[in-house]
Every structure is written in C-alpha cells, then in structure tokens.
Length: 427
Image (cartoon, rainbow, N blue to C red; front, side):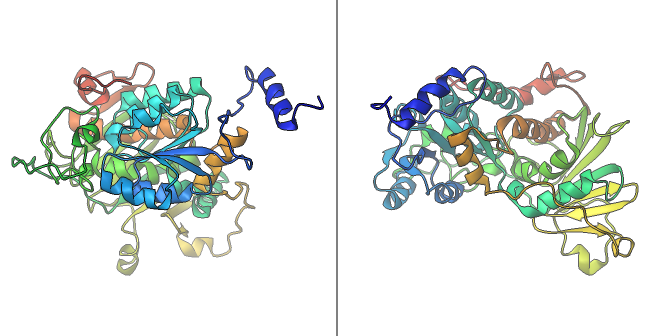
C-alpha cells in the first residue's frame, strides 16, 4: 500500500462497484487538479457560448466544419487539437467529455458516436432532429451510464424553480390547462434555385452530414438553417424545449397521448411561420391535461391582461388552475388575479439553487451526481416537442403509441417520425 497512491487505491476500489453504481471514468491524461479533458464540436455562435462556459476545464480538442470559425476558437485555446470531422475528434484517446453545438440535423449522429465511444455528453437542444433519433439516443444513454445534459440553460435559473414549487404546492390549485406561446417565427421560405460557390474554408459536405445532398446556399448556413425542415424544426423545435420544459417539469409530464396542430398549408421544405399545437397528456390528474403551444403572433384567448401588460408578455407560459392562474416567462412570474394573491404566503423553497447548467454537468462527469436535464428527461421533452411538428405535417390528430414509436391512426406520419440518412451515415 505504501507504494500505491491514494488516488490509485480509490480508482481500484471503485471498479468493484461499477456494476451497481455509475462511476465516471476520467482518461489517463487527466490533470493534477482533476479537470476534465473536453472536446467541443461546433465552436461558433451557440458553440462559442458553450465553449466559454466549460473553459474552466481542459479544452483539448475543437471541431468545426468552417476553418474560419475553428481558427478563431483556437486563438483562445491554442493548445487544443483542431478537427473538421467530429468522428476524427472522437478517435482521440485523451477526451473525457464532449460538448455538441451543431445544427439539429447532426445532433444525433455526433451524440450517438460520443456515447458509443464512452464519453460524457452535453448536447444543445433539441436533443435530436427526429423522434426516432431521440428514442435511440435515450436508450443509448441509459446503456452508456455517462453524465448527459441537454442545453436548456434556462432550466438552471431560479425563476423556473420558484414556479415549479408554486405549481407543485398547489398555489393555484389543480392545474386544468397550460398555454405556451412565443413571439418567434422561422420558416415560410422557398428553396433557392441558384448555386453560389461554397465559401473558402467551409467543408459543406461535412456540414450536411447525414442529410441528403443539396447545393450550397447561404440561405442554409451559418444562421438560417432553422428555416428548413431538412436541418431544423422551425420555431417549435427551437424554443419548445425551453418553454415547454417548465410545464413538463412542474406537472411531471412525459408523453402526450394525442397531438393535433393547425397553421398555414404545410410546405415540404420550410416550417410554418405560425402554429397552434394542442397536446393532451393522460398524466398529472384524472382526465389528463391539455397543453397548447402557439407561435408566430398567436396567443391564448384565455390570457386576460390590460393592453399595456399584454405587450410585456409576448412570450410566456400560463398555468390555469381551479384556484387561480400563474403567468411566467424566463425571468419572472406572477399569480393572477393579483388582488386575490396580495396576502399569499409563498412556500419555502425546496428546489436547491443550481450551480449552473454547465457546472452541473461538469460535476456529474466527475462524481456521478445527477443532472436535471439528462437525456432521459430531456429526451422525453424533445420527443413531445417534435411531435407537434409531426402532427402539423401529417395534417391529422395523432394518437401516439410511445412504446412502438408510431401514430396508431396515421401510418403516413412515419415519414416525419423516422430518420432518413444518406449513404455513409448511421446512428
């Protein structure tokens, strides 16, 4: 024992429990202060935000299909190896954990490869581009037993915690219905027909990844990909995981039983500029509960505020209970009618303060502690969100069979539920 370090002893002892407990595995190249060795896939825009939030650790690898973005990130982390293909990054042996901030259409292939390679994974929302990919990632994450976190950063805020406490302590009684609306509007585009040259430094084929090949156009990247079904899911896929997260958390929702949607005539190329999607969950209370999503300027008729207040709530979540209502957004919430709650005594906080969304994941990678948006929780949330788009594109009220991953009454929905990859790509 005198020649074996305490760290080596603890590592050896931990393997005895590995079959029962989750024990994080750091690489042999871990530093003296036990920092993680992290690889970041997608380093610009949201990727840059994530990169800055994990910079307390060892950034050992950077990956981006655009050499210009990659070079800029490398200026801050000159010691990191540079890659254009995430698969080559994952071939490196000294990486403990991976952060993924690519467009939606490559979330699943990068995440699955990272999980299969034995890495902890942080992936931006939505977790995947399609429902079938999402289920595959959820199942792979359970087998991998690694620390996972989806990038719904607002989940770590104090405001959401206080709302969850109020709802779960029945401040407004039993919730009867929920309405969620956002002011954003992607979509409504026509596929371009001209073919400008691919910019210098961009590996466009790698950017396409598993998606069927199409000519490059600046209408797709770097900022406009959410306008296209091929790469994203419009406003609902973008913001649904942030806003629908709150009722999913507060009411402990998981799987909708039926989903229906209305909007402009479906387009095969581009998402709708406005949408109303109604989810019914056979959960929370007897008879279930309805959650309705709105975007593109649509809002619930149930929302009754003075005109000057309406302008301040262009996006929000309204919980309607049998004893009142609760209106919230990212940073604030109020109980309604306000005069009825002027003497209301709030419950003692019982959800502890977050260390930060990224820090929570970092700690989990090192210690095996829990994350609040692990791929099981956030996978169920992502599946529900994406089903709103499936219902819209199918044009039917879907009766969802979650176990078999199909719409019981609409086999044509499979086209939008299942992923379809070009040759050379797979999960």
